[in-house]
Image (tube, rainbow, N blue to C red):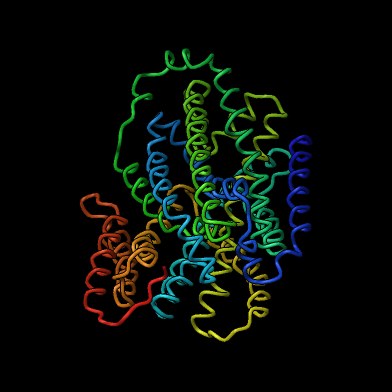
Amino acid sequence: MVLVLTVLIIYFAATAAISIVLQKKSKNLEGYYLGQRNLPWPVIMLTFAATWIGASSTLGKSGLAYEIGISAILPTFATVIAFAVFCLFAGRIQKIGQKYHILSIPDLITKRFGRLPALIASAIIGWTVIGTAGTQMVASSKILQMVMADDWEISYQTALIVTTVIVIAYTTLSGFYGVAYTDTLQGILLIVVIGVILPAAALSKVGGLTNLAASLPEHYFELKFDKSIASYTVVYLLYFLAGPPYWQRSFASSSSKVASKGAIGGNVIILFYSFAVTIIGVCALILYPSFPKGISHEMLIPLMVKESFPPILYALVITSLIAIVMSTIDSYLLLASQTLCTDLLLAIHPGVKQETQLKLSRYSVVVIGILALVFALRMENILESLVLSMSYFASAIAIPAMAALLSKRAKKLGITMGMIGGFLSSVLWKSVLGNPFGVPEVIVGSLMSLALLIVGSAVDRRETIFLE
């Protein structure tokens, strides 16, 4: 326990030092939210990867691999394909962001279609990013609780508060500079420890790949789809194309080339990391033929390392897991602050000064962190909670956001109808009708969004600005 706490304290001290050093650079909105648009490609690459690699892609995926085998990797293929498509547009996002001083998706919508559709987009994005931050808080709290329960009997609620306070502190202090460079530290840590050392140690523990294959039934090594994996696949595909954190990182790149190069590098890291986590989950099948009662499969990695590996590896893995979820929490807290203090505020009161927005942004990180904390206290399953939040967002925003970026024919009425119709139809399909015929809500919502966008744009005869 002392070793774990020592490593954690060193890590927290490093994140604090980064935030303090970079605090002075966040003097205006572009500095606070986009790092002055001058981040180099290694930082962009690692912050892309670290933002995606969260509780779902680590704890959720390893638990899923334990249950169904290597088929757990299937959603990652869709992620990689979706991210590859996003890479094609990352350069354009950076270019128009820099040329027209665009900070976010709602800001783009404002410049093309006016305040009403931007207000709708801001509300939907704000709700989603707060919910996503909450899911990551759940994960980090479960890890802290598991680590400290035996010696100090720390409660889930206490662990949740500890996590929230730490992330709020450095996010408030240095904004996106702090987020990006702590993501860089966190990205290196998770690649080395979770991506390389732990899979190698797990394979060694079970006797290597040959023994692993010989010790488990063949169906654990078969790639097979089921309804849940197909649902996750579609959600990730749509979400990546219009995910606020990925647009933000493109906007923050120093050039269009850096944005594209960073996105491609992040995609490669995501694929490599997902394979590593899947291998860990499959190896656990040999170490734990029957999983301990009362413990979720999502806690497989901390349990396995605690019981089967040396203390130093346990300390590094626990620190890496905390780093993973913190790297996602900070991004979504900052995005939620931006949505509230620039996108929503400017849609309602366009004359607010930048100095006022910047002050409100720092305060709002604290308020939003508390809201996410309340959201987190009501969650149980990490992966299911994240997918539900992403489903509604993807249904409402993905198609309109890409249309705002790429389509000259998209009009204000079409964008507005697409967002409202996509959101409401997905909520109705899931929460009221219970997904009839087993069709995921994100498919219904996205198709409705596309149809309404086309119809609304065809009816609307007003001229619309297209950003070249």
